[in-house]
Structure formats: C-alpha cells, structure tokens
Image 1 (cartoon, one colour):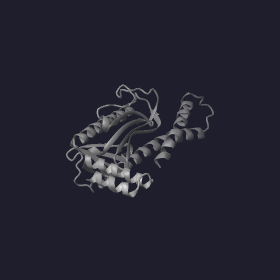
Image 2 (cartoon, rainbow, N blue to C red):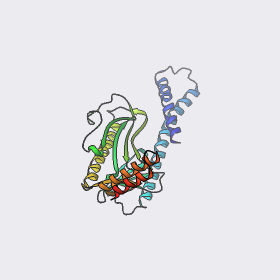
Image 3 (spheres, rainbow, N blue to C red):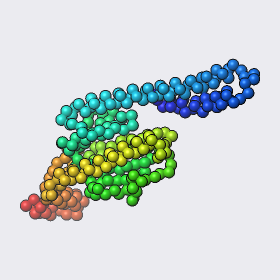
Image 4 (cartoon, rainbow, N blue to C red):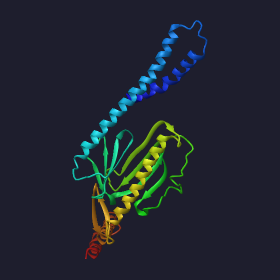
Length: 272
C-alpha cells in the first residue's frame, strides 16, 4: 500500500505542476470547466497520497518497534545501553555493555539473536552495495576500506542505500544487515537526510569496532575462541590444535592415504 501511494505521489506531482502553470499563465478565454476539475484533482491527489503514505509509514514503524520490544522481553537478562534501528524499524541492533553482548531483533523473528562481543567477526559499511570501509576483529582499529577517509568520503552521485553489514561467528545466520537509508530515487550527499543516515551508520560502524576490540581483550592469552551456533565456548589453544590434527588424520584415513593401524598409532601419540 505504501509503495502504491509513493508511486501515485511521484506520478501525479508533475501533472499537478503543469496544470497549475497552465492555469496561472495560460490563456483563460474559453477554458472548459473540466480543466479546472482536472487541475483541482491533480493538486489534491498528490497531497492526499503523501499524507496517507506518511501516516501508514508511521503506523508501520510503531508496529515494528512494538514487535522489537515484545521479542526483547523474551531475554529479560539483556539490558540495552545502545540502540540502533534500520529504516522503518525493521531491524534493531542493541548493545548490553555490562554483559558484553549484542542483540539483533528483526520484525519477523520470534526470539532475539544474542551474541558475545567476541563473536563479532567483521563490520562493513556499504553505499549502494559498494564497500567503503571494513573493520575486522583481527585488525581492530584499522580501516580496510581501500584508503578512504569516511568523514571526507565523497561519492558525487545519488545514493539509494546506506547499509551496515555485520558478520558474526554463527554457522546458521552469519550476516545481519541494517539499512540506515533506503530511498528509491536516491539522495545527494549534501542533503540533510543523507548526512543524518551516514552519520548514524558511521557511529554504529565505529562502535562495532570498539566492541570487537573489547571482545578480544576478554579472551585470555592461552585461550582461543570457538563458536557453536549463538553460544561462545572458550577452549585451551592446545586442545584445539589436537582436535585439528585428529580431523586431518581422520580425513587421511578416509581417503585411504593411511591405514587404520597407522591412524591408531598417531592418535595415541596426540592424545598421550
């Protein structure tokens, strides 16, 4: 419905402008009454369409925020200290500083997706699907965006989408995208709405970098991070290396490179 109202507004607005110009600057002699009716309708339709479109959008945002609150109530131990939301409040990103966790809530989800800071792998800032900056947990504090300075970045064209893509260590849902701008026609970088959306995306991007660094700081030097689903488990580095070697040996046995006896001998050496 909102899309139809937007189309109606965009389609009828130029017609109303043309009719008004003809009405004020054209020859008024022998102007049929039907022309006045068409002019009145062409002005009224875009006004009504825009009003209704904004009204429905506001109602949808309120509904999505209510859903987010309901979903978040299923995790009462989570206390949000930071909150970012996408256009239309379809996706929310929340941060609990005390427990060092982040939470994603989508309007279609039935439960919040909660991760520890150390589960965050990467954050990418995208303009129309083009990556202009990447923050990775292995290089916290370094912008791998091809040398672009974000605050001084100029695209010199209309931008339709500003997105933040956050990758977490989760085999089932590794990518979460938050849209800070989603405009079908596109906005120029000097427009206030574009500046607001870019600044919010930039702040969120930098915050994720801070969270990744804190997540790494929370891991002890003799430990490594292993993620299973949405639960993070800390294991000694030596145990992980042994498990990796056992997997390699098992693969060699399955491929027929080594025999069962050779596998058993090497396994005993590793396990001790």
